[in-house]
Image 1: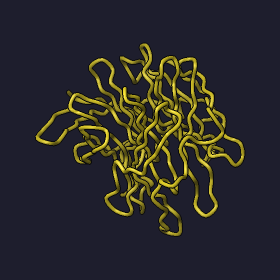
Image 2: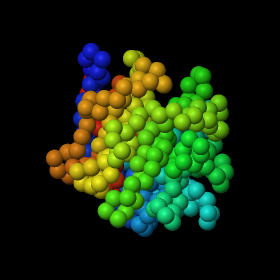
Image 3: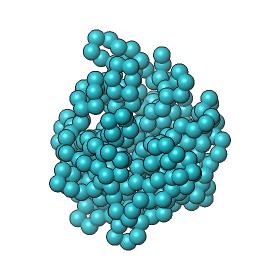
Image 4: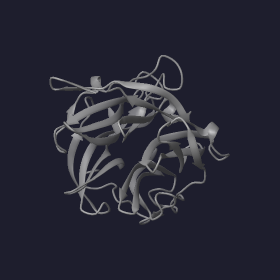
Length: 317
């Protein structure tokens, strides 16, 4: 990472695909989507979403060697959370988004999926808490901690949460509408901000952190870290016309903020894009960043929203 004038320039060095459904158990038919890291003692736990069938997602985790992240230490292949009851916000899918340690507990924020009638689906944010270091979890309720509301009329999902001295901070994906394209409805969304005193009860104010550049752009999966010069946010963005491995497919964006409330979008400085060939040649999506010792790593998905799995890249010094 280099600071040039007012720009933060990133240079990520790709290290390849780590894990996919081919490495998993029998129920994992496709995808290892939205890699969500939790740093442990000598390992990095990655929660991810896999699909036993089309349009149905469940969450498991894999432990990677902290010194050699391409080395798999352990796969917990059983789903860690059950789907919600009929009519609840997470009855058709559970995707992890952010894992936060709070003392002896681990808070796992996740996206719940519910199929729709007039539109394909609705997304809301759920919370599950672990008392054993992130091995097992219990949902705090059958309802979401963040969902459709005055400020989020369509959806509220894919959060990143930071716990700081002054409280808890969340950046999340907020639905801005549905566009009818080619006879199908496609969702658009921006990135909004909310606060909490306990990590459970949130107060969204409708404040947009990163907005779309056009009416067709959708932004999701923000991931915020703190550095010596301020705060860094990675996210992914796409268009609405040909985004399933086409020209409008997800790319990774970047923004810098001197504080938590003002962001300067600098996508050209993200430092990572699609490869010429291979598993991430058409799409790069759902970035998540961890720093271990003197290394900063990005876990991310490639083509087909993580159809083949997730890989990682390291930040050049």
